[in-house]
Length: 239
Image (tube, rainbow, N blue to C red; front, side, top):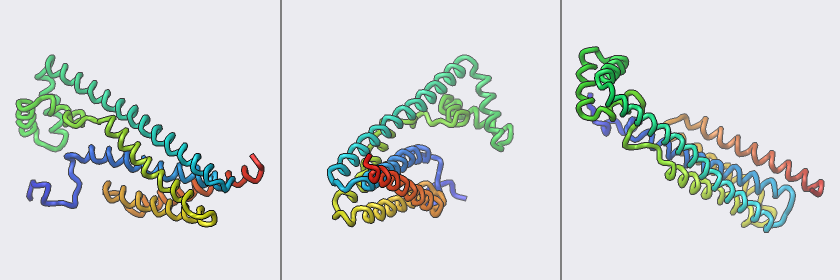
């Protein structure tokens, strides 16, 4: 059997997968939130008023507030993750310096626990330790790649940009068409976008496509239905 990862191009591999999934998570969440939340705002407002300027103002406010909120949230979340990773690596570095033999035994036990015979696990542990002890313990014991720690700025920008791009779709769909076409154009374009997001995220993440598509489409449709109903009731009440 070949050890070359290119021999199976359709299969996911560990190297770079975590980084790719982190980017994918931030981008997909941002785009979905941008589409759904902005669509909910403009559709809800459309249920209460026909004013294009009001719809534009509400949509832009939702776009800016949402994109900044997503960016800040991702930055804080990923910064916390990065700090935890750095703290774990620092502790591991101290343990390697203080008790190298005990750490070698620990690495041997971890490798043996993965199905390698004791003698071979010991040889592998010794070779990994001689090459880069911290890297070996980070990967095997902590599940961390020291060279690819989570980057909060990458996640923040990915969320900000994807949310903005997603939010522009319902915003333009509600303000550009003639009055009678605003709602149907918005609903259809949002559902198509959510189907596309669901399909893309499932394909890139090697997840079931129908489930992701259905989840996105149904969630978006429910959000628009609820906000439109609320907006209609408030508009009828003159609030």
